[in-house]
Image (cartoon, rainbow, N blue to C red):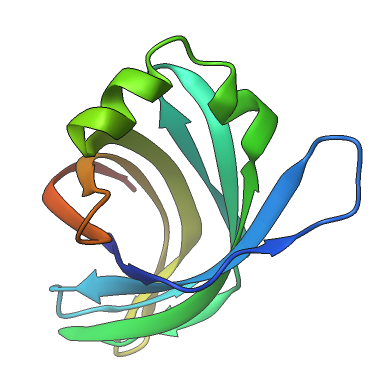
Length: 145
């Protein structure tokens, strides 16, 4: 359901965590016949099992059989990323494997019928450093009614 497209330039944040903030283009694809109105949420980004970033997803409406495009602020915790012993090796190889975890809670609506829905999503992707591109994205999701 959520796909990240392309990164924007990083800007430093002023706090002890040594964080950088960027805006990401994110898409929420709704292939269903029901619209999905969802609440604010967070996507967590992991590098080799270490939480390295959080993305704040604003509430919104994914219309039936449409794709909703969002600009999402992402806070990258640079010191956590740098603490990985494999970072240098992966950067030199030009590829990093990242995992994301998201939960979207909301209401699915078809005509006058409303149903509480939770979408649980895990994605694995390869970031090609030299191309600044996301490759081989594979997402698994579970819908809880």
